[in-house]
Image (cartoon, rainbow, N blue to C red; front, side, top):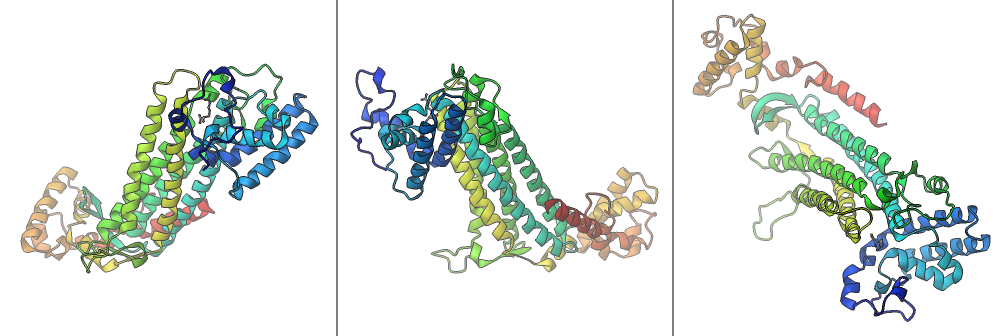
Amino acid sequence: MTQEKPKDAAAPWSGRFNEPVAELVKRYTASVGFDRRLAEFDIECSVAHARMLHAAAILSAGDLAAIERGLVQIRDEIRSNTFEWSLDLEDVHMNIESRLTAMIGDAGKRLHTARSRNDQVATDVRLYLRAAIDEIVTLIRAAQHGLLELAGRHTDTIMPGFTHLQVAQPVSYGHHLMAYFEMLARDAQRLTDCRKRLNRLPLGAAALAGTTFPIDRMMVARELGFDGVCENSLDAVSDRDFAVEFCAAAALVMVHLSRFCEEVIIWMNPRFAFIDLADRFCTGSSMMPQKKNPDVPELIRGKTGRVNGHLIALLTLMKAQPLAYNKDNQEDKEPLFDTVDTLTASLRVFAELLGGITVNAEAMRRAALEGYATATDLADYLVKKGAPFREAHEAVAQAVRFAEGRGCDLAGLKLPDLQQFSPLIGDDVFAALTLEGALNARSHIGGTAPARVKQAIAKARKALS
Ligand code: ARG
């Protein structure tokens, strides 16, 4: 970026001041270093505004044509990296306007009629975020496809389901994966919902109170693809609740990815050895030759902290601002941009990572057999034979202790051994104690029976397509 002051780059508002702004202050208050990222949206917004000014007979046809031509050229300069950004011009809006005026003269100076940077920036940020949400939802869908693909291959793979990270009950690995599918489905819904609320036009609010010109806000809204206009001018320029909502939804996506990654990290440890992660997602150690580190899932987990932090930053940014616009709001951009960047990069790598998982079904099964995972099934068996659940629970607890002493699983005990804990136990008990029996018995909606999981996957495939 050019930091020297171009000869003609006095700030558009400098007329009121007796001395130029201190260099230090200029650097401190300028946002062009980061808000130039909004440039294309700013141009889109200016074109729509100029067209409306012309339709409302505020701007001549000649001026409109010059503005449109000039803005297209500026867009090309920005795309080809030949645009000269100036810190003296503070932000993206004044950089573009100043270049436009240098190119087309007075017509450029008329563009800002009936508009303020306050409603302009609020509009730019909404346009930016709308596009970002569309991309993120597409990436979430891709990750969901990856989950479905893996789940489809593992409906009959049995693993121990955990509570408190202790073996609880056997579940299908496909079922486990589909839990994440559900989380991501809600994430996509939340973002789509947030998009609906943010898709309203602030422009026309001007600095805060509206404008004395006969503007047509509905026309601008239509041009820019908004569903309507912000109904209150003070609210339009001042609130960033849509950005907060977005960051909350984004933080949740990251939290969901992070939980999955945490499991990948634990499960690929040889103590678990449930899965392996392809080498392309791992790195070695510069010191310990034997190491294979799960860097990618660790980084997704780590970056979640940063995205969560951005949410808190935005909430804190808003909490003490009196109406209407305050310069504080300029601080909304960096957290927002970084949230979008971090989330899109993480989703991309996450979808790839799913394809790098190989499953060690044998290790999963062994772990499910080791942890008395079918103890609840034995209790349910006794209840079905007439025992009250609390008594059944107690009897099974004793049986587990006994089996532990013998160093075997419940299914490894002889019938007479089992019968000392309840006379209700018959030789049909062993069917209930197998892993397959335990899974198949949970065949209601949302249950882990492989047949159910297959149905859930088919339903999800349909919903995604
Ligand atoms: N760069 C500013 C922002 O991002 C644009 C609006 C400035 N408005 C003002 N009155 N200083 O919020």
